[in-house]
Length: 103
Image 1 (cartoon, one colour):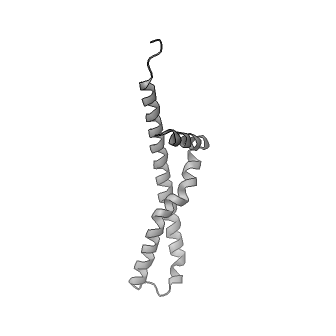
Image 2 (spheres, rainbow, N blue to C red):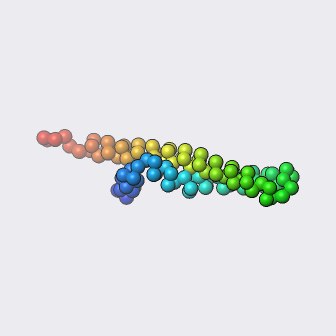
Image 3 (cartoon, rainbow, N blue to C red):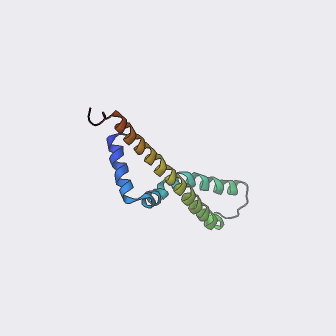
């Protein structure tokens, strides 16, 4: 973790874990949910399970919302713990490099 990443992490940590996870849900969830939602929709159209694309709109919106929340929240929690581990590892390395006091 370089100095810039360390400072960014300290700012995020100061805001709190909940804020970190919730603020990342839209982006983290979007990159997973959008392709899957589109794929589900296309499969339904191609297999002719749907007579009108508009009849699927509510179902697709619910699938998108659930995938976004589940994946975005899970990935946010993972990112929090990973960055916390990396930060702690950097602190431990710095402590080991310091000469002992009194020498």
